[in-house]
Image 1 (tube, rainbow, N blue to C red):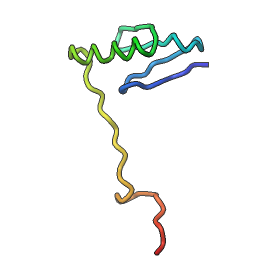
Image 2 (cartoon, rainbow, N blue to C red):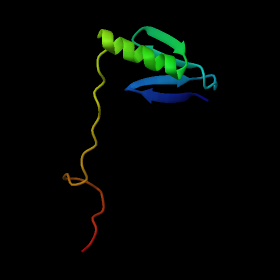
Image 3 (cartoon, rainbow, N blue to C red):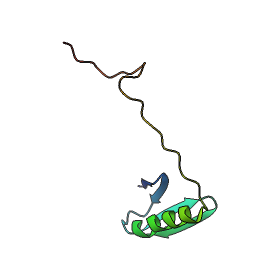
Length: 74
C-alpha cells in the first residue's frame, strides 16, 4: 500500500510502509530520506530559487454565489 503526503505543495510517497523512508520527486531528480530531511530539501531549493513557489488553491467563501452551504433560518 502506497502512502502519500503533501508538504508545501510537493508530494512525498512511501511505498515500503516504513515511516522513516519517503521519496520526493521534483522534475527528474528523486530524493529519499526522512520527512525532516525532505522538508529541509524543499526549503533549501526554494531559497536558492531552483523550484518555483507552488500556487495555493483557495476555497471560495460560503457566501459566494453557487455555494452549497446550508443557511440557518431566522
